[in-house]
Length: 123
Length: 123
DNA sequence: AATGTTGTTGTAAAAACTTGCAATAAGGAC
DNA sequence: GTCCTTATTGCAAGTTTTTACAACAACATT
Image (cartoon, rainbow over all chains, first blue to last red; front, top):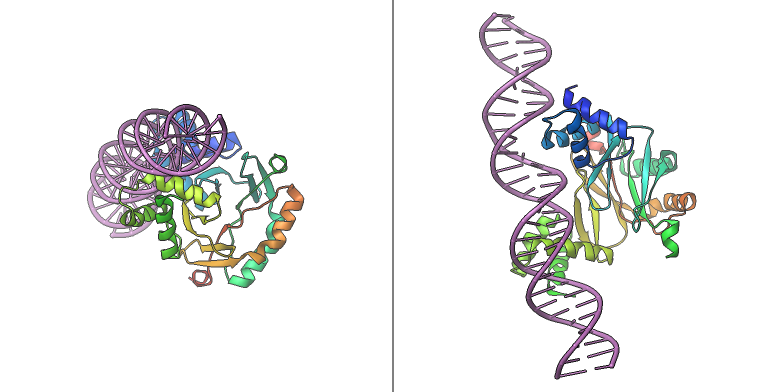
């Protein structure tokens, strides 16, 4: 655990929500001047591989990171970008089906679904 | 339908598989010299919104595009990147649950799941 | 203590992607 | 046909993300 990794983890823990690499970089810079962008990207990748943070896809194909907590997924409104969390328990049946059907194991516990939220359905 | 859109659709139809925006740009350039990168990105977004192509997330959070065909999803091996298709029918129960639980509608029919394929499980 | 190995970082540059804006083309109203 | 509106494109510049590589620190071996 290097100072860089601590700083980035601290930012994510403190913010509590998911942030883009750029946002993380700017915030972590306050804590650790001299930190560079490539390090942030590499560190986030490292932390994600080791289960300390989670990455989530945004609609536009960029990654966003948040501190690892209880397994959950995201459901994002395509129109207004409102976002709600989905409990992992809802996916368990699907995951069992997928594992049986494909032979794959260890399926990712952080998927982002897109749809249209109740508010935007009426507009 | 502009020449740009035709060229890009043609590339995707011809290749049959999913490609990155950069690959699409380089291939479409042969068909339509003068085509520019921003146009490719904007066109892909447009075609995806109108259901002519589909975008899929890669592990690293980039988008990849393929010609729209029967609804399906992807299951990608985190280790060796092997990729298999998952029929949409397997997700139908989950989607019904999600829609009931959240009020969201019109859930996206192109999700990418990550896991470890049978081959890589033994290694 | 000296050496070698491994892993992490910063630097510099490249590649990928996005944005704002002016020019152009296409279609509708009159 | 002319004018107006809307949509799409290319250009130029910006931002974000990735890559290659050299320097450095930590640690094990001898």
